[in-house]
Image 1 (cartoon, rainbow, N blue to C red):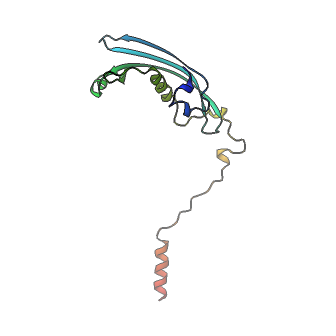
Image 2 (image 1 turned 90 degrees about the horizontal axis):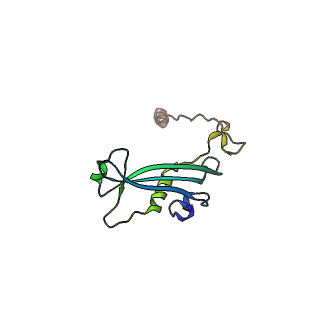
Image 3 (image 1 turned 180 degrees about the vertical axis):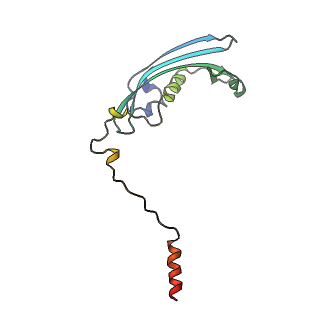
Length: 152
């Protein structure tokens, strides 16, 4: 599936060229619940939030979903199964499932590994000047008022 065809994911990418490979299998568990196993693999090009250059994030997602009709049914599922809310008459949107899995794999602040980051050479975290915060006495103004009264 082409990454640029996923409308919610594409704007998050530095480069939406590329594809996501997926395998979708269906089955039933011992309680006869429908199982949807989804494996998604993709290399996403994101912008590193530390150095602002492109980086590749490899996504390898495996999930097992079970269609449910409501929150009560979802809460009763074992932890190994993820609920998939499907309303009556609604169809399974495979592209949306794949897009959801890819988006869940993106960290909130994607960054290169520390030694691989292209941060500007001249700027290091430890090069910043150390400043001690000046502690101002909140009662200093009261002291000045007191000396003004004593002068009168």
